[in-house]
Length: 54
Image 1 (cartoon, helix red, strand yellow):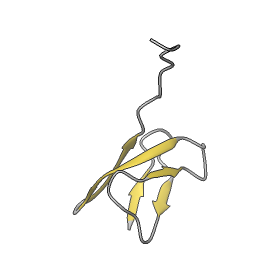
Image 2 (cartoon, helix red, strand yellow; image 1 turned 90 degrees about the vertical axis):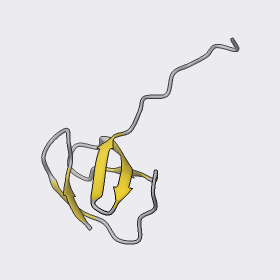
Image 3 (cartoon, one colour; image 1 turned 90 degrees about the horizontal axis):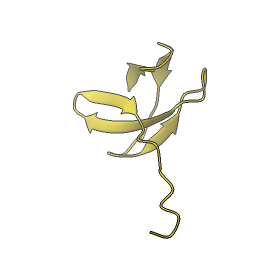
């Protein structure tokens, strides 16, 4: 499956991916999330926030 990194535009090729899987961009290191399989769509993964025990 081919797509582009939304951060740097690097052409990405992944195989055997699952919906909501997190994948690293090999060029810029951004964390990407598989948002759809048909059509194959990647978006920037949401940033985790600290809750500091709240």
